[in-house]
Each structure stands twice: as C-alpha cells, then as structure tokens.
Amino acid sequence: MTRPPTRSTEGFDEAFADMDGWPASRVLDGLARHQEQAIAAVRRALPELARAVDLAVPRLAAGGRIFYVGAGTSGRLGVQDGAELTPTFSWPRERCVFLIAGGDAAVTRSVEGAEDDREAGRARMHAASPTRDDVVLALAASGTTPFVLAAAAAAREAGALVVGIACNAGAPLLDAGDVGVLLDTGPEAISGSTRLKAGTAQKAALNLFSTAAMVGLGRVYRGLMVDMQASNEKLRARSLRILSRLSGRGEDEARVALEATSGDLKRAILVLLDGVDPAEARRRLDAAGGVVRRARGG
Image (cartoon, rainbow, N blue to C red; front, side, top):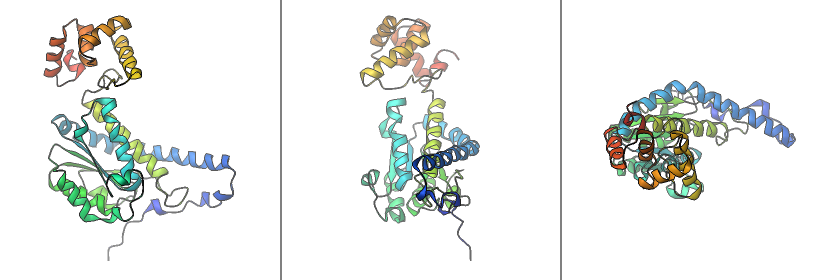
C-alpha cells in the first residue's frame, strides 16, 4: 500500500514548545526568525519560478488569463496578489480569474468543508473555459487539497499552463501541472498554522511570479510603473514624477505631455524622449506590443 507523503507543514517545532510561557519580545523574535526561513524557501525555489515565468509570458502576451486557485489562506493570498495587478500594471480585470474554495464568501471567512469538494473544483474550472493561452497558479500549502487538485487537472486537460505551488515535498500538487514549485517551509511555530511561514512563502512567491511576468510583458520600464492606472491624486503625481525622471524634463513639460496623451504614460514617454506626436507614439507602441523599450528601438 502506498503511504501518503509526510506533511512537514503539520510537524511540530520543539523550539516553540514553551512559547505560551514566553514574553512577547521572545515570541516575536521567534516568529520573525521563522519568517526569514520562509523567504529562504522562496529563494531555493527561484529556478522553478523562473521556468514558470518563462512559460507564462508568451501565453499571457497572446491574450491569456491568470487564474488563482486555492482554498483558505492560499486562496486569499491569490486574491490579494491578483487584485493588485490592475492598479499597478493595468492588467485587465477580466483577465484575472479567482477560483477560491467556497466562493467569494471564503475571501473574508472560513467556509468549512469547501476545500474537500473535488467536484466543485472541477466544475468551476470548466465553467471558466480555460484555454491554451491561460496560466493557472494552483496553490495549497499541504499540496493535497482536493478542490485545488481537481481544478488543476481540469485546467491541464484544457491545455492551460498549470503551476502547482505547495509547501510539502512529494505533494501531489507539485506533479499536477507543468511546473511544480516547492516552498519547503517545514513545521510552523504553531503546529499546522500555515498562515504563518507557509503563507509568507506563498505570498512572496506569488509576488515574485506576477511581478516578473509583468516585467516580461513590458509593463515596467527602467524600474518604473509605466502601466499603472493614475486613478487618484497621489497616483497622478506619481505619473508626473515618473515621466520627469525618465525624460529629464520638469513637471510642467511632463504635465503637458500627459494631457496630450490623455494620461497615457507610455505614449507620453515617447512624446518627450523621442519627440514624436501622440499619434506616432501610439503607432510605435502598437507595433511593439506595448513595450516601451522595443518601441524606442531597444
């Protein structure tokens, strides 16, 4: 009989056996050291994350969507990461899909038993009609969550790129997709509470993946957020600073360029740096797939 893989995330860290008798300063120091271990686990997974990004970028450039699939903490972390892509990178909202066990209600409260519903995972993925251009980030600290495994299997059957992210070596989720990302965080300070180390590692891995993918898609230029949505006064002021920094011009000239391009920061960059009119800036960007560096000839 095949034995199930050992779940290190459910293990016990003897170093924290007397934590409930410690002063707050010692509790915090121990928890902080565990958080550092979480980031170290992400660093060990960088080769797999890089492979996932390299496979994802061409699909996303072709019009694919990003799916975040998870349950409990993992699902909520996916929602947090994906929700930031639109204001930061102007990623279209309709191209970000969230499949969290228990539905929208599970974002703010626990929906008991939802993570065990394999049929719901498969059905919800089928309902989203995944394609070969889509990228599915399947998240589960244990790597054994039925809802997530079923959704990942349905996505892979449809030809989507599936990236399985789990915190236990040998977990089935790591073999359920095209790329398996092991974040080997080990036992938690509070045994089994994967909102701690495992949650930090998943959040960091998602942050790295989505940011690197957006860089690869040309939504960053010279380390600046040239695709952000300037939806409030603070962000409009940031647009001016970005344009001034890139062009070496004052904010008055930057403001005129932004007004001429209806606030389109990428076109305004070409207007100021290359001396073209807004229409030519649009043509160059369209021909370059929206990538500023390419539109400027490298």
